[in-house]
Length: 311
Image (cartoon, rainbow, N blue to C red; front, top):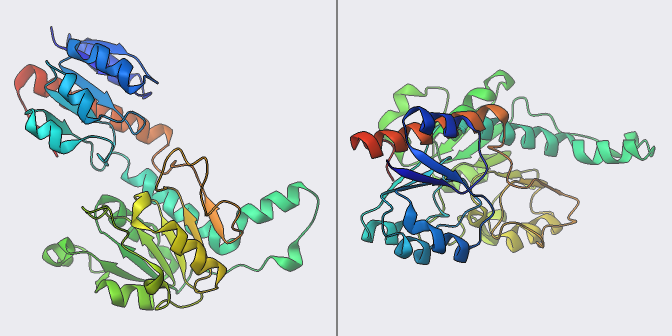
């Protein structure tokens, strides 16, 4: 009987699927790298979300591990190179939390444009800052979407009712642009120059360098807002902080950070930045979908050799 380790918290639908398929499993969350190394030789499969870092040492210790499943889209917490060396399959669940992430990005856009967190905080304190809070409307503005996968596509539909012009910077869009007549595919330079809101929904660069730096901010409108619900190292946080302080842009909303958990960060206490703790994909609905997807995929592979959503 195959055996699977579930090392991060997720919907118990994954456990039910493994039970239904007669696959043995253990749920052991919050383990350190050393603790995982001690037990990983027992398992044929491993299921993670974002908390567990599947390091080179863990993979090299996993003598029987055949597949690692990520309940989510990003796999930057898994050492893909070492997994490939050891002929271990890595799967993810693309699209499973796309709507949740797009909705959070949209919520961040509206929050930063209307200064909602500040309005909420001060009103709770009885300060009534009405005269000091003037928002910006989203309608008829230009939205720039960097990356046009499942999340970027979904966001483009969420804002359709706002009569926006939508610019996209995506290499993959060119071959499928007839499916998305409501967006315009442009260069990265054109997007950052002309957008009122720039939202990142792309992968990080292979070398880990940020896609946007101080020089880019100088080309933007001073009324531009930056939204990042993709990956923390896409946006250089020091450069973003400087751009906000120097009024090169109007504001930013960030859900992901270069180092997580973000216990310290240069953006902390910047009044022009709205920060959330990597919760874009954290909805009740999305947690069920990704757990169901990854459990079914791992079951199909361990029982039938079927490969779905491999990375």
